[in-house]
Image (tube, rainbow, N blue to C red; front, top):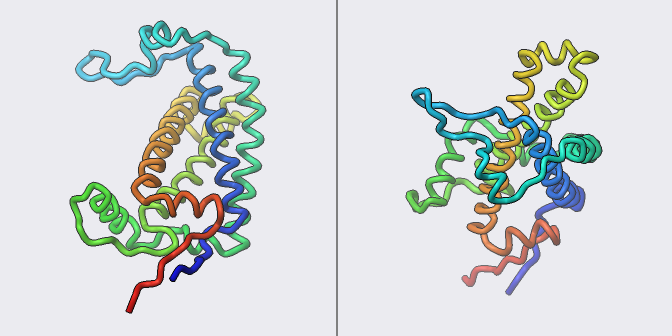
Length: 220
């Protein structure tokens, strides 16, 4: 015997799927802007450990330097990113969905347990709700990151007019570094998110499309 369980409201699914292509374009166009002046690297002992990105990267993929094109796409899709994010946060606040998403005092400990379970190190299943603790922490963090990207992006875009905002983040160069680090964070989130969906199974993915999942009643 099977039963249908409602899981994700239409609005949540809409914001989720709209954000995916918008964020993808933002990352791609942002990289086009960065490639015009790719100065960031990680040094260990005075030697380059990671360089974002080495010349071999551009040569291998035959990437063009399209600064103006990247800026045009970035500034247009910035508004889609902002509006979609604003509506998402507003919806979660007014609908009460934030109660399912906001981490509590035990969430960080339980998120670690979720990780250990996914890595097959821990056998017992961590506490489960509509969202597990790892999801609560990740989804809350992504909202904070989005807010940070918006503010640092505006500071980079209008460093003179919004000089006070630049100062809050430590100056123009600091804003640019934070903006770049947040971009790396989105990429890592996307990879981990996809892996989590794969591990959770088809039902978890389909519920974000249909809004419900089909459960089988246990035989007594």
